[in-house]
Length: 191
Length: 191
DNA sequence: AGCTGTGAAGCACTTCACAGCG
DNA sequence: CGCTGTGAAGTGCTTCACAGCT
Image (cartoon, rainbow over all chains, first blue to last red; front, side):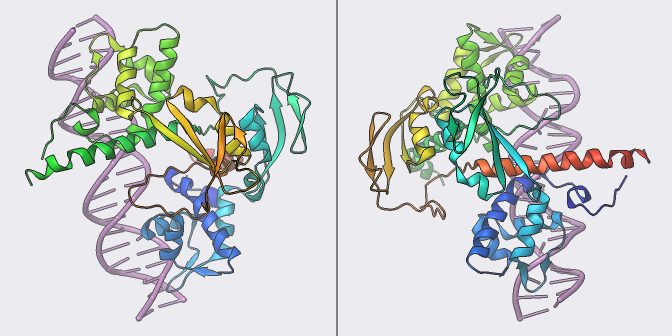
């Protein structure tokens, strides 16, 4: 079945890799708009987002045809289309579970609000924390929510972010680089 | 040139996708070790890490041949080999730049220490913060370090983590799901 | 003339399916 | 016999290169 609808999210199958890059394009476009720039070519926008221009054009082609040949993209229009594709034109309430150091900092983090997410609930199971007011919200009680083994009901999406994991990946590359430098003379022996 | 060395990081070219999963395997193995389990088959370990068993075996095959056919993997041995591959058998000092809410929380975060990273320096450019003691360290001054446009010298690796980006990706999938449910009856018309 | 949009080619990762070994 | 380790097949993403439009 090929469903024809007005809504972009249904028209095409957008690759996951593309979806993961759209927020960065949106950020770059917001930056351009703030600097009063109204039109941009793929070469420049892709540089600002840290990808190749062919990649950017291919990614944007999944959303539709919003560029002007010979000219480039209108910044405001493209920003709106990406926002719509990401579903940011609607309201997404956010709950923060766990208000230790990190949760506390996140509750106060302005980056959510400026990008369209509204923190509406703070939840913790610790009696000592429940009832406290943080960033204008009162911490409410939650029975239990073990974060170590998160088993997810059908239909719930999860994205896992772990800074220690990121550091471990950096450690791998750091080690590889250090070792490559050590053996470089050896490699030069037989060209 | 094929360099033969004792160090695993030089023996093979390990795919980036594999490297990104190794920390999760290591976490799962640490968990098993804590529960007193000394041997594990790929089926069980892969389930704990959230991947297919074939994926796990393929990934581990890049490190070497540390399993026992007909039995499985020895938990301690495999954990050590992955640690070594990731470069976690050496010391990696970490500096935190910027001690606002998030930096403050990270300085106190125990997850770094338990996974082999040692926070050795806290840096901020804000006079009001410099000199303050956080988590046993004194915040030192740094001239400037604009985080918005991070231009990186050659040889420096960067991994970017942005929770707002993650939420935007979730918003996309949330929207797509909501819309798919709406149009589902339409799709059923022509099987 | 210049830049987008896109088939086609190339590349990297995942999954299959089974040989090989303890 | 059971589970690992791995060629081969399959899949999805990236890059190329240029036709097509303004």
